[in-house]
Amino acid sequence: MPELSLLIEPSAPLPAERVDALATGLAEDLRTVRGLQVGYAQSPATSHGKSPQAWELGMLAVGGLFSATTMQAIARIAVAYADRVRARSIRLRSGDNELVVTGSTRVDPQLVEQLARLLGVPATTEPSAGAALPAAHGNGGGAPTGS
Image 1 (cartoon, rainbow, N blue to C red):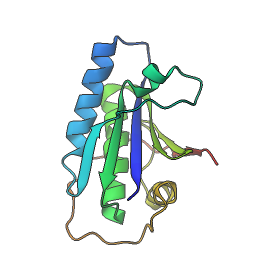
Image 2 (image 1 turned 180 degrees about the vertical axis):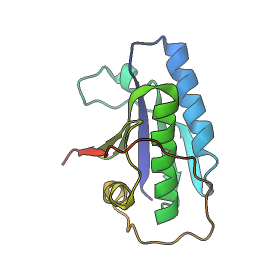
Image 3 (image 1 turned 90 degrees about the vertical axis):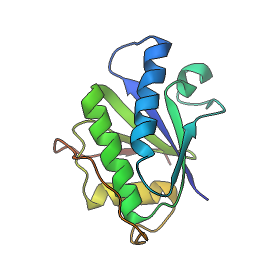
């Protein structure tokens, strides 16, 4: 089963307690999506030039049913959350690949397709139940990175 990591990148340096509170808020938003299991990252990542402790701080692990609607919900929640808390970005990572969203990222079929490629699942899978989606803001695009 694919797993997705979400990392909150604050726009300014914040104390660890505040970053943890931001991750808790994002986790609560993600838990509203049926079929997702959300938890805190248990093991630190070792890449991207940051210390392992810094990378784990503010990182969530998400697994479960990744349907088209679920992936759209994840994208909308990440974009809306980045906008609401004025985070620089939220990185969505699966393996060595990443997708970066900001508060100005536009949630459209292309972004859902990029997320599906990131997870290695079809973007056309229909879910058994819909999910309530927070409104997204802005009109930018996601920036995929990785190999």
